[in-house]
Length: 503
Image 1 (cartoon, rainbow, N blue to C red):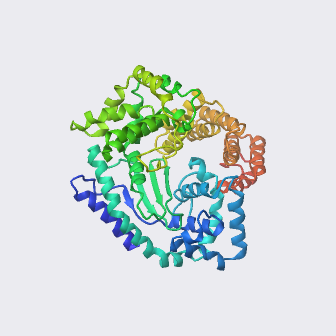
Image 2: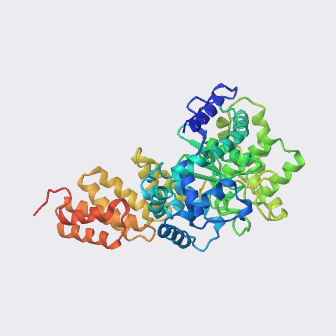
């Protein structure tokens, strides 16, 4: 849309001309998103609901009426799918995984932007919703619906724009950040078909999406929280390795209740979130007594380094260096013995919070998903797979060597890397990796199916046609059709792959 483009350019120009400038090619945009609109509209039709009808935004009320005129067979299939994929959870817990799916699709005709095995787990869990989504888009006339409701989106984004720009500009001013975000991007989208006051922050590799339901008071703090993650995550990840005694600090969580797993099991997450929450308190200039209470509650929720960062930031503020250059210096000053003593004298004196506390009464914004070291290594490997094979190999091998020698995604990834080299020794190693992936309990059906197919290809190259045929048969038996697997396996059953060893 022309108006959408104008809004993006306006945001870019704001940063280009302000004293706290960003380059013209700013990766921060606020815009509408047909992918998210279509997915959320489909959800509303399929039975997703967490509000009373009187609470609906007018756009949500309108799109829910689509069910009245939709093909009843398609409508029932969509509702059956939604119900069968709730996994025993409530409606409130469903939105996030469908938003995660939307951001890894192209614009219509809605195709995944990456290989299935490299998509986020929550998106993969509903990936087979895509054929229904494609059919719904056509039969419901979503382009016509969008043309009717888009003025409401334009109005809402115009309302939010100044607050968002101000929050980001103030953050950049505090961080002394005058440059762009390298390979990272952040897209802020309003979705009026989502429940009111909802905020979803999702990430795919270095691309972040913030999806906002309507809110009478804009959720600017949550947007700023996500933006600080975009700005600081990579720098914090590097700096966290400068902390001596990381394992000793994490051992303090043993036997402790009330600490989310993303903090108690991952030092990098705990380090980064401690840093960002401290920055937010300093940005908001919270009075000392109130700030002390917020720090204590966050500390008891597992952010063991938040007191250190909050106490250290005034020194940074008195200097001139960009924050990205100071993070490593701050990390190097963390004294494990002092932090252990702080924990022993104060942690158990703080009542366990009934809820996590972020900034005063503002609820905690969702953290871009970082669950455990294995998952992070796999994400690193899969992100690097196409452009940096050595880095991908190193991450996959680290998973197998240090965490789980039978991790299916790592075995499958190494098989692909070895097969790409194409010499005889590499093909033999690839065959071994694919065989192990097939036997791994953590490899999903699509990986096992393609491990059979790729094993068949290697065996065809080796002129071992009987063994190749057996692998193709097993691929067909899985019934999985990811990336036309069934068609390819049947083709290779009829004709040896490569054609060099025909009998």
